[in-house]
Image (tube, rainbow, N blue to C red; front, side, top):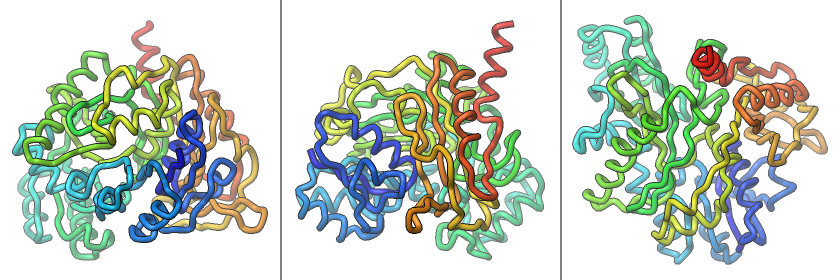
Length: 428
């Protein structure tokens, strides 16, 4: 098979690494890709937003399967365009991708179909939103309605923080049109869980769970980012708790899509808060999570391409998806200043091309200047290690992190610590 992957981040590098292992695959192209992918795939200089260019390339190159990594082309209807051209493509269509593209759509959809989520109100007027916050009190969550690269969410612990978040989104337009509508949401207490599933329109096959670390600094402090690291499994949650999440969130969502005449095929990602009352949805994404993919796919022991074809053709089965019992930990190395302003073009040295089954460095924001690898994004590299347990995987990941260098590199030093502390407590 000839395969095209659309995207340029750490998620796409992990997808490429896994897809390259399939005996079904002969050649892989990535558009536009990044510096870390050059040894495995042919990079194609087409933007993820150039849907016509991507479709034309897929037709000319007789691509057998296209995999869409990021959310923007999904929302713009790339799957619909490829399908109309007779091309096989993995990902939800434009109508289905609305579950990520509009938080208001998602919240209204969940409310209509009794999917557990936080209480909320949507606002198009900043002053009305601020007035609601004053009446409701804090802590409270402010979300820009549209896509904001994982940064449009503020957990406000003071009225001042809440009002500033509303003002930035709606009046200062820091997220552009994504902040035209703002969701003000109940603050949920509990631990977060990322639970992705393969969906073929009717059948739901959950993946192994992961936990992401969104805030920039240790101890979950600082501004929200696209994710500073992740790990899998998540021992704080029992098999029963995970089964409950599948039964009360993922399966009812797919049934609700069917009722609404929406054919959802691809990955459905539920960002959950595991509360004392049970799992509640924080958000849905319409694609593989980033950086969750970097710990979930290394644990996948079956052929990802075979699974994806089954999803596209509507014949997904649970026995196609098998997992390793090992643990995986991913630590993100980011540019100093991220998620705020940061410098690009900084030289990277060390173990940057490590890529095997046990330890991998997934490139997220890199490029070459001549023969020198340099930084080219806020999240630069994702360092993943597998181990018999979380403690071993974590030690291996941080050992690899210490062998990579670029000026002002920043990373959290407490990835997976929560889980390891929990395991230590229950073993006492």
